Length: 379
Image 1 (cartoon, rainbow, N blue to C red):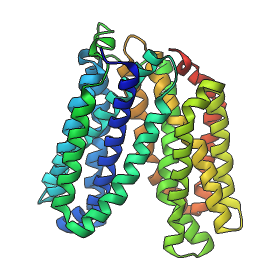
Image 2 (tube, rainbow, N blue to C red; image 1 turned 180 degrees about the horizontal axis):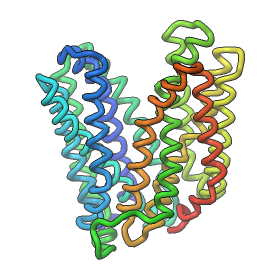
Image 3 (tube, rainbow, N blue to C red; image 1 turned 90 degrees about the vertical axis):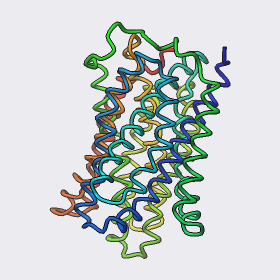
Image 4 (cartoon, rainbow, N blue to C red; image 1 turned 45 degrees about the vertical axis):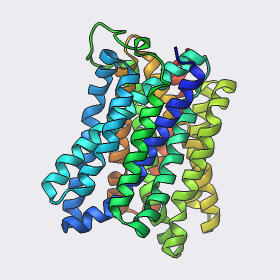
């Protein structure tokens, strides 16, 4: 039997591969827009097929964890993600882009559920928190995938980039599959493969909706807000996302130690306060550099909330952890999608600076209900 320590690094490799492919896909989106030669509105709607595929697949993936085990689901969907990126990246027309995009989204969302569920299995085996570190691995993978992907794309072209990233991720998943824990540890725990999530799980899902709404909104609108407020170069304003992500990465690589020391409830409460305070400061301070520093604090706050919520979702349904995780992740992903358009609409009526205070309010709500994540400390 694989040791829990080896399984921990195998799951980390899956998270890195997931982020790696996600970053590579981000570099392919502008090329797809040029190749398809459609309007921004049409292309934006086409991209929703990727998100829609993920949201639809996540609850199904939760049932598949119960039927087949999280290890098997993680490997199969990881291989599908590795291959699936080729479909929309090479699609010659809009309809095929939408079709293959939906399949890619389904693979992305299902792998997300599978590897988070197996992360819970590893936490249970190790009897200590490791989930935040896994999500930190995703952040690192996404950064490498985006930066390296853009460089390879510029120097060697799309076919070489796709071959390297698809092949590299495929091999990573295959190697990691040898070290995952047995499927029997979370296979068939519930007599029903599909059932509606519990009220408690939906409560954590609502908090995940708010948490990922904050992440998505700051990522999409933070830079433009700085550009409007301080009239700076686009390159300077764009650093808002980088500073925010840096704070998130630091939070995630220290989050497991912090959860072990202070507990999930206190960690989420303090993290939510940092997210609210840091973001509010970023919106109010009189200097662009002070605002960037404040965005870093906001990133430190938000970074650990989603991993703890995902862990809590799985533990609230011990007989069907995949279903619990699927409920929380799908609702969270919905917030990631819904947040930026909401902020944009409010910004049209007021300003981005005012509209982004919605994320401050969302963080305060998460902090107020932090006690709901107590289940995350159950091993």
